[in-house]
Length: 276
Image 1 (cartoon, rainbow, N blue to C red):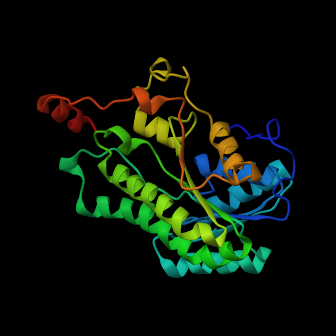
Image 2 (image 1 turned 180 degrees about the vertical axis):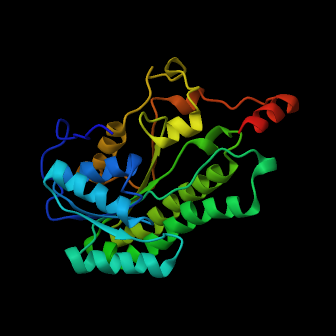
């Protein structure tokens, strides 16, 4: 993945002295979001289930930015593990100013082949994981008058085949963004979301789009870059967005406006099912 450099847009060190906690921060889009924050002075803690991958990512980001990135293994589905991750963050850095809820699970699954367990697992990682980590972090965000970004998607805007599990989870996360913005606003906490579109060099694009996405179908005439999401992250956490809360910012080049999921005939769907 190409290095993320938002310094060409935003002033250096705008997050100096601040601390970010990010689930899913060891890979993909959330790694880019984390690296962007560290490039602007924040210290970061990244969490996911596999410590070896986290440790490697943390070392690479620290080397690339000159900042501090600290890995903590935790399964966001398990409250006791996220509480431990928050405790370790406070032990290491003393505060939490920013939270990114980015841990997610997804795969293509026709309704016929989507098991009870698979549906529940995606809901648990995406939705319950977002709730669990936010609840564990909340006392520290209140103390710092911090800010939250929930990583969403555009799957549920028009409806999409084979994505009901992820779409349902992200729709619920969008609802939490609004509810929390209203309830936590008086505590000085802003809550927003980012809904990425097709992003190059990510597992989501290669695995879920299957190489079928044509850039000319996107109004912006290109697929997105991790840098597009990273810069949106820096903006939403910055003072420039101090009066923005309860918003899910769609960063997709207008793709959701033109992207539709065809109502395939049953015979065609059956053929697609057999190839997944």
